[in-house]
Length: 313
Length: 269
Ligand SMILES: Nc1ncnc2c1ncn2[C@@H]1O[C@H](COP(=O)(O)OP(=O)(O)OP(=O)(O)O)[C@@H](O)[C@H]1O
Ligand SMILES: [Mg+2]
Image (cartoon, rainbow over all chains, first blue to last red; front, side, top):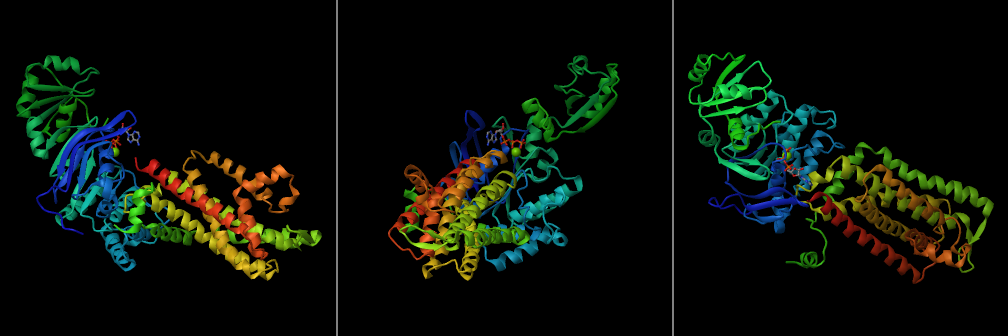
């Protein structure tokens, strides 16, 4: 295994495109992922995140553009690249005919690792995934969170340099998510490069050094979570709910109060530098919202601003 | 670049990492949890041998095995049962089992995200069907020999012959399975298998058919499997054997290549 030169990006994509028939799932995107960073793809359903991840995972040939992973070309060197990747697909593809431990053993053998090595790795990884006490049970009856942890443990059997995680925590309860985040932090500290997709803003803010926001197969923004918020949102957001079905009517009454107002079906979002002052100004106009909430801006607001839609429909 | 790589670049065979054995190993492990299904494969042809060969054979007595040579019915039918069992086992493994793994279990999706490629999937699954077939036919040949239904030491070669039959049918079976959409489509498999089982000169000699039908029978793959196994077990060695071997080998290779292409088309898009 040749060491990868530090100065070259681990992944570089130029005008990367994926078409299914006439339909363009990924429409010519450019990005680079550097060694050791955690890079995120953020976007709503159908944005093209999984299609991009599958191309990086060398299981889906790009329709156009160039893609280099670990300095290699997936079209020519798929097996070599895949040998150095860990893949956590959006939907678990565990082997339900095997036990928890066997899932890791067998998967390790797919990488050509010797039996003694996979046995040792399996014991470590079961521990890492907190599944040691279920090691010899069949996979099928495990809970969703356990399966997800096993999928992640399995993806690490070959000590990957690059770990691809497609919505790693979707469907997990909050506690399980935090356990997983903790595991991912530890991996990152040990030098593994993480590429992940998510439509959870908090996840992106927690995990990603850098991210791109995708929508309709294109990249609509790029940067660190902090940069994106600074660039595309104000410091704070004031959320107002009114006792009415049509919030747009209230937006008119608040016209001119703040630089930007977003109308959602159930509430108004007022973008402001200071939520409390704006709340007072709303009252001064004689309006009495059912609820008032001043909060810091998040990536969700960035997304809303960029695409005019919420992330989770 | 070594010779194998050079061949791989010129012949349009989908990529593989030469790691098919890892998939075979996976199947062996999975079978350890469901070994009962392995057992049924042993008994079915042996039951047929006793009911038809020994039981019915007592009523029939001797039969003309071609070329005016009269043999006991058990010796006539045993090779056919062995060949048919090889076909049935291979088809079962490479259709139902592969369909389940392909459509429901999504096994190959995870396999293909490792260094293994579509060719490894095809070779691994078909190879596994062969290993099971090899086990079954060895046991069957032993039982047949003990019951006096094997006439020649050439009969030992019936085991590799049955493996070749398994290869041909497993490969084509897997290729066809990749086209199937629902479990109903498997009725077509039965529709092809049953007449072959009954009419490939299995239970009565080819000469029983009128001229044109003989040609039809001789075009089917199981006929070549039955004839090959029978000629070996009766010690009736001639150049015809090469034709049977060639027919089955070409069928198997075409099936492997087609399967690999289809796995690639279905999963790597
Ligand atoms: N194999 C395929 N054949 C045809 N269309 C596809 C295929 N895979 C994905 N698509 C389409 O491409 C678009 C992008 O899908 P993709 O799975 O990449 O989105 P995503 O961002 O991962 O969405 P989600 O958040 O729902 O997982 C979708 O409209 C989807 O229907
Ligand atoms: Mg997705």
